[in-house]
Image (tube, rainbow, N blue to C red; front, side, top):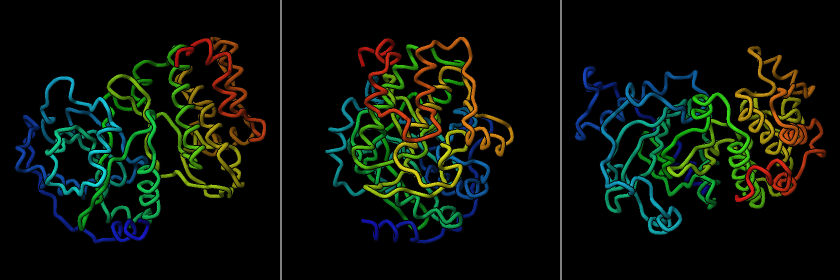
Length: 355
């Protein structure tokens, strides 16, 4: 599989020219032009070097590519993703197998579109990665790793990768559609979450991370932007570009987002699965306060704060929540709690007892 993925990512460069057929007044495109529009977006994606994540949310109005696929109410999201995945497990797709809808997101390496698989009429998110951009950034290994790892994960709180295909210019990932988008966007709108909601989200994330760790997978980039919400509000962890399968070895690669990096990674030391435990502390702090614990406009200062584990929890946060955050954000990885201990913490038991 690894060899096939390597050939897939290096399968060719596309020098398609920009073909902007979108009407500026109504911003609608006839479906016959969808594929040419997709090709036309390539130069834009290549030039968008300031976007660091693969699926950054964008405005539905300003970046709409076409009307969303129209399906009966209640069928926008498959009710049983696992069963659906079993149906399409061995299906070989091409772009012609999908009706493309509006753009859901954009990033450094490509874009994400709402799509409908024609034969089975189910809705997915189609992630389109441009090979030339990936190769220019020398991120072929990251793309291969994302596909190899995510394709083997099956958990209710982890975004499913149903399959992938490619052509000379692009790689397409067929992903589960999380209708409510990023948790980051929801927090931005709300300012901060209640302790009940935070505990509920944390319990789901912890359960998913525990599953990853039992599979010897370290995510290494847990952050609000990489946590999506399904139609019914369930957590879906996504974006496994920085994840690694590490059965026994410690890792040394510096990766992830600065605000969420643990001190052992900032300091260039070896690290293991406990980096995800640290990220849980950052997530919880941010959900309850609306900002990361070590944030500073100067990234060097952010790193200094992380290395010293310098942060202050606002007084309005409950003592139970403060206690759990303080346990998760320990400078010494050996002092961080296990995931089982997190699930049994009074904060989780009090506010998310039914999870």
